Amino acid sequence: MDFVFDRLADGRSVKCLTVVDDATQEAVTITPDRAISGAYVTRILEGVRRERGLPKVIRSDNGKEFCGRAMAIWAYENNVALRFIEPGKPNQNAYVESFNGRLRDECLNEHWFTSLAHARVVIEEWRRDYNEQRPKKNLGGVPPAVYAARLSSLANSGAKESSTVCSDGLQIRLLLK
Image (cartoon, rainbow, N blue to C red; front, side, top):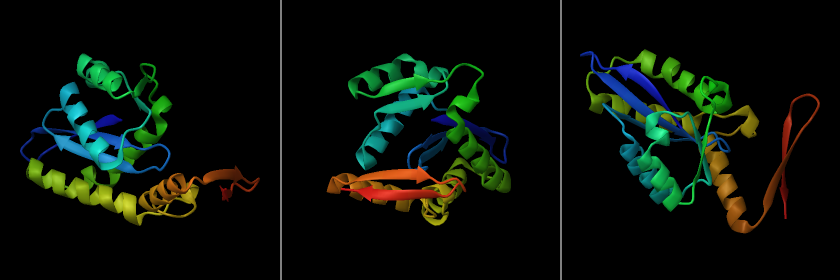
């Protein structure tokens, strides 16, 4: 979980909360708004819970929105562990940092948002394309949403997935019963 900042055409700032699932590489949500407090982050995570359930652990930097009272209470009440990276060590949250760079390069820098509503529409379209249309080599050549659906069906069937990395870098995924 992290933030990315941008500006609208009129100069007002936009703060985007990005929530990325490390296991499936899905962009769970990208929520743009003018300001996002810790209480607002918890409301966004409540929406995530209704849609897909909650993780056991959330990793983020130690910004006030993530390590403040609202988030601490929410995490405790929902049995979610909060893991904060060390200050000045964004590589400890490398996947979301990489994702945020991709979001900036492919979406934010490519659009001139005329309003917050316009930014929300364009960013959501980009998020859906990222999840549903872009195959990832390390997910077996399928998009994150497809991989997540497979993991979900595996979990529901009681099967387990195992992966092995060969010497040539090819990743092989095995289904174990």
